[in-house]
Image (cartoon, rainbow, N blue to C red; front, side):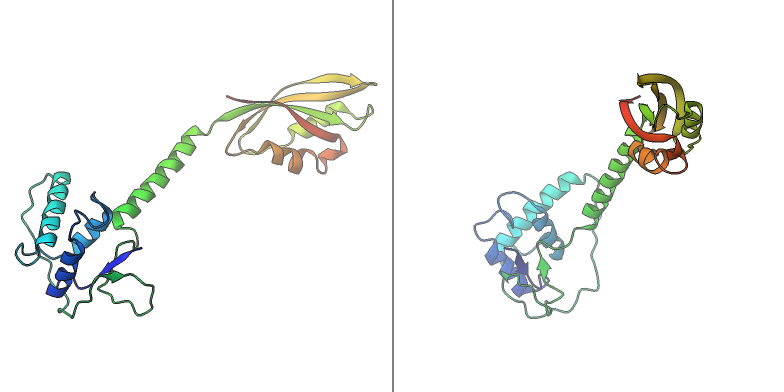
Length: 225
């Protein structure tokens, strides 16, 4: 369960943190976590080793690990405008309440700005990767007429009349099916992101006016280029 620390800019708040850290190396276990970073950011300066030995030792440990991640030389800064001290509450279990104090520090609160930016960068990378993977496909269709009286020349003209971005019709031939009926086999090249073969068949090739000649279409082969 999440733990809440209040008023870490006050003596009572630091004492509560010091008591909590008794026998502990870090806030949430034996390794540095983002919980430590959040609490560290709320402590204005290194606590007194005499008054708060546990907090002071923890603060020094977090500082040394952070220093290794930021090798540049810091000149040191102070942040003004700190709210006036108020009576600190002891370490307590965090409870959802409409009246939560603004000074409370929720260890499992919202993501930090750095974490949000990292998530956004991952999404951009995924989108970019998908775009790069987008390619072309070669598709062979069987286009079947209604019967042996269907004008196959007009059927092919009707099929080739379908135009859309990312679609290129290729070679074709008539193949005997039986009982005097022939079907049209036709190649096409598509850009995968722009053309859905299923939609092409259902919404363009087997509806009016083309269905006057075309009874059905089937995908014979589908190969990535």
